[in-house]
Length: 310
Image (cartoon, rainbow, N blue to C red; front, side, top):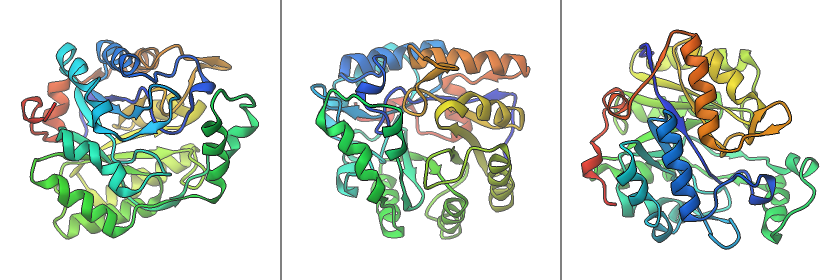
């Protein structure tokens, strides 16, 4: 595993898991997403992992036209690495999910490394009132939901982005996803350094116990040696705790309201930038430094911000 005293902070200010009724601070409109992304970059995030939403009801959308309403503004105001999702929402087809990356040719895109049950329905026990009908259905329907990411799907996404040089944040929700990534590495369809985002705490994937984190690290070390950059994504209230353990072990970290709404016990975070500042405090306490966007580009071998299509 590649290690350094420089830690890449990825921030995901919006996404497909949480819905607008869960927090008044979740950005929905293009203007809100731009503001949240810029604030996170100013707080120290080197990479911004971005989704789009319907500006009317907050429903996850993969319409490139919506992305184009906020990506240029973020790129003009910051030098952050823009990471465009190909995950979109588990309810979308692969064709829908791939549209923004094909249209925008970003430096970095997310890529889920395997199919899985994706259970969001436990949140129905915590959130009772919803402003939009789609929100309750979004959670309830996850009882019978397989987030599809077949080998053919992954091959297609990898191949479609090869010509314009987009690299990937490989999102691994379980141990088998690391083996899937190793399979593509063995076939030469991906190249080091691999940016491995280990995701903990989504029902259907690996849990959020520190031993789960250790198991992921041991397996990734065995499969990839020094050819990868490791990053930790803890869902929900374990976001900062798992990121802290990971950082102490040489990992990069990811925070943001896509992954956790919390800024402390029982307290909603008022922004993703707040969570970036929280993890920066942790890093400073560990005598680590947050990487600049250009340092992140070098660590991940990215093509450069002048080679995108927005």
